[in-house]
Amino acid sequence: MLGTLLFSLALAFDEPTKIDMEESYGRTPEQIVGMGWEKWYDFYIGKTGSETTMSMNFASMLYGDSLYIINSGLLRKVDSGRRQVISALRRPMFDYKQACVQVGYTRTGGGTMWSLFSSGVRMSAEEVIGKLIDRKPDGRSATQSEVRAVWDEIQLKVESEHAMISQSSSMTGVSYDELLQTVRSGRRMFENDVKLIGRIESAKERAMIFGYYLDGAETARSTEME
Image (cartoon, rainbow, N blue to C red):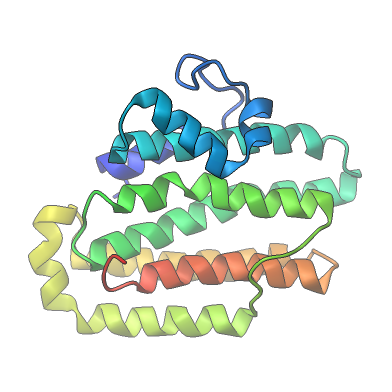
């Protein structure tokens, strides 16, 4: 199901250990993260010479990969118990939001701009991981019940959109049954991840992580591109 170009684009960079210095125009992960997202984006787009969907995707992926690499190094300095908990969340957080993007992409009938959501998943996940490493939770907060409520709404919406989803399947490459399966899978992912999140001692950190999961669920609930 995730074999479409725009999703394989992001997944091709899964769990990076290094970045291509030619693709990053000579910038190391440390330099990229040190620039911050906005300055890095302006630098990268300036080097490519045009702000295309592809260049925006690669700017996002390179920044997300750089965050992943930096965080991997910082995690080695975290005490073993906490390191195991944080490490256990990384892949599930990534997979969850990619599933959310797939749901939103299919429900809206597709569109290349959804690739920007997909290519930005690594960045958004690793920003949360970085805050856990630093013990500095901030940003959006949420509760388990808020996330569950959105998933309940999504399933009802998908079931009511059967005909529309079937009509757009030729564009998205995803059938109604496949989408419904992805919705249920996304919900199961969340419920499984709740157990991992429960191992985080800080209530503020748990709320921050649930904020990430709520953001993903709201992406899946989208009915049109902003």
